[in-house]
Image (cartoon, rainbow, N blue to C red):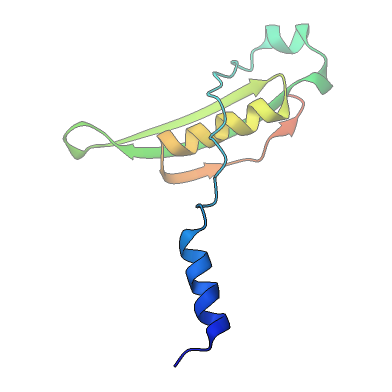
Length: 103
């Protein structure tokens, strides 16, 4: 027979509420890393990343994408990467968010 303490622990665990998970970040559009953005913004106020991915499209054909985007904050950059990986779940390649401009 199982010890009483183990039975009590199992009974308590079965009535405990499930652990809540964090909500996904908001969708962020991101900006095109243009020369005009580079000229109008301070280098330290911009974050950027590069993402490549694929997904199954119509009639099971593979769709691919490659995007470079700029952001006003690291949090926006990370949120955009979260959704890019969610929307394009296959063959992901990406760079961590970096401060400055890609070129």
